[in-house]
Length: 359
Image 1 (tube, rainbow, N blue to C red):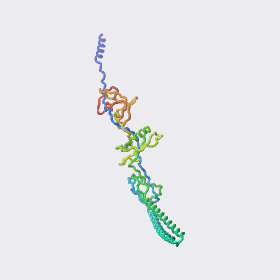
Image 2 (image 1 turned 30 degrees about the horizontal axis):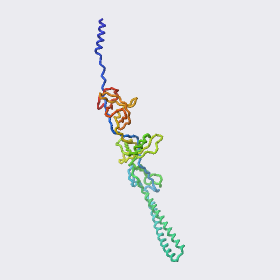
Image 3 (image 1 turned 60 degrees about the vertical axis):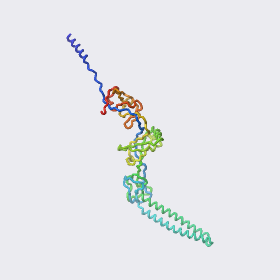
Image 4 (image 1 turned 180 degrees about the vertical axis):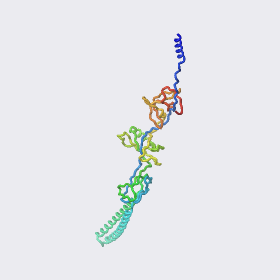
């Protein structure tokens, strides 16, 4: 009996002092308000710089390079002297052409005087018609010779001018390709210099073909702005979309686009890879949340919404796009609601939370 009483007493003692259930922990989280504001509709791509124009300068006469007036990589202006050829053979040819012109002008003057004299003698009946015709023909031939000499003089002057080769455009020269003493041929190798015009400058990039109809629609309304971020991730350069290719690349399913940039400070460079953002329009009253608030599960995207009683609810949402650190929500959330942006890993529906400014 004594043993049974002790057992019952022990059971009664355990029943009267049962431990309470553990408290549900309050999870610290960071939050943000759901906002509604205008957001740009943009396309992002990788682009490459392309010179606005490229000129490969060749000699128009055969000769020997006497001087090179540019340095490799130098920026030159339109009209700057680049290369000089030895012009002495062409100066001699010019002097010969000028001498022939002077001689034939003298012959022409004499022929015209004689033709005038025989014209009067013929009219007086002193000389026959054949003699007059012969003198008139001589004067006409001398006149034609003078005209030919004048053309030769102009051609010789042109050849002399070709010995001084000037920049046809402003831009940056490439490597030095010829040196004093180099023999060059007319309109043939070697190329004297290559100039790339880089202000303004093109940026080439491609986007998937499904955006073509939108691009054409917005282009019909206004010029579409483009931003290009250089490879050093510095401030973006601003330009405009100026070209849409007339065919889709069947191998990649993309359409090639070109943007034109003033590039006045020469931050963009031909061949350089840049991050391109093409803005199509502005979406008014877009509902946005910080992109880190959006979680992805088996059933799609969702958010943790903070209720007034500081518990969280799981809310399925549809994300339109993510831009500049924000996700545009097309369905599932309303402006003004509070969503969790950090600390979601410890949350389930109904978890009590405490808002903090950092974790």
